[in-house]
Amino acid sequence: MTFKLNRKGVRELLHDPSIAEEINAKAKAIQGRAGEGFEALLENNSKKTRAVATVRAVNKKAVHECFKNNLLLKVIR
Image 1 (cartoon, rainbow, N blue to C red):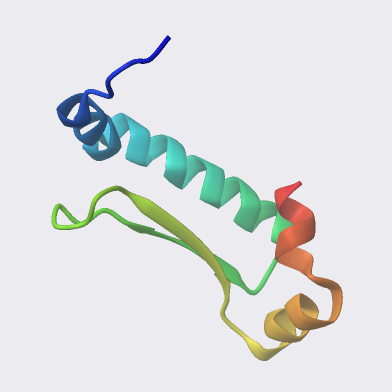
Image 2 (cartoon, rainbow, N blue to C red; image 1 turned 45 degrees about the vertical axis):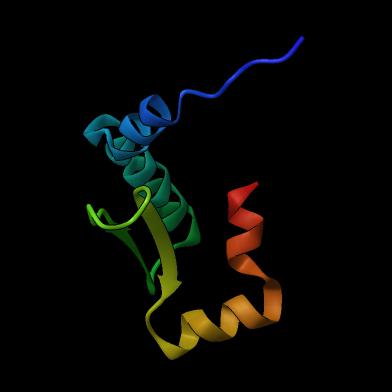
């Protein structure tokens, strides 16, 4: 059994504001579990194919914690 993907429908879903809100909420939750020194950024550019969220370290202590203990990988689980 095969199916044909509705590309227009998938594109609409990926650009849907409610999907971007959900992605942002997940990034904020990861940021909260990571602790101080991390920030969550949501990129929702209409030229891109979808909304993208990033959690990153913003100070030296947080960067060190990431490198030493793989903190962001641990809080994602």
